[in-house]
Image (tube, rainbow, N blue to C red):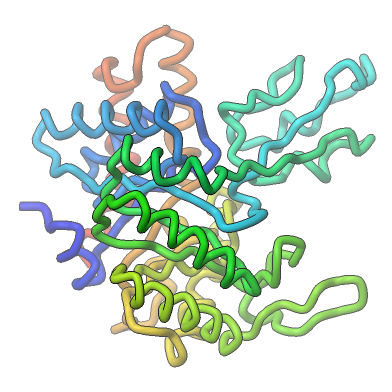
Length: 352
């Protein structure tokens, strides 16, 4: 029998699927949730959007009808500018006719086609297209739910959990978001806090071994400074009666880049553990199939979240299903391939 989400957290076998805080590709989300729920994930994290939540629930219901345990549905929110909540955009009319469109080649979400601009529903903010454009035509825009919208949205969607993406120096914004969650009256199993070593919205993506600053670059946090920020969040969460889950964002949205990205999250875990506040610690940001092997024996980690690598594994099959104009889960051969790939990523953690 599959472990409950709380049991999985306590035993270090927790696995979460990150569909993407900005991902609104409903057909892909429904298939991803169906396949990964069947593979045994304990939680599925999606954009705070009614249509996205409905697609995720349809996928989870499909898996539950086939014997899977129902994962928690988690909604992602932010307390300020955050790369997870941005959308790329550009005017294709400004592109030269002979442009080789390197932006298309580097986009892991297939949000940029052979012509036209960015498909907003597919873009999840990884930012790889921004430096790829030789003319610098690609910009970004942040997506931030208004304070008034949050309580009503939670009341309508009734998630099991919420994740708040935060950064250093944003305690006031975090507390305000927390008040909005409380105002909804929706009971949450966990309130996850996602934070990395960036200092503010413009901080460069940092790694645990890079704790200083350099000319022209904002200083990044040390492990103790990050722990201090998390303790501030913990005080607010405890006062609100919420149970925390700390998501350590090692190298955001990069798990599909290569095996080496797994090191950032594991190094961040090792650096923060001596100073972290109470609550389970979960790996994220650059996690992939190589993450588990990098952990020290007996490492006190609750589990892992897979984002870009989980989507990329299934991307060719999702594309083939789209070509056939059928959901992936309704095509037996493709479904079996997808399930084998998903289980290959998830099951080592379930057996840990």
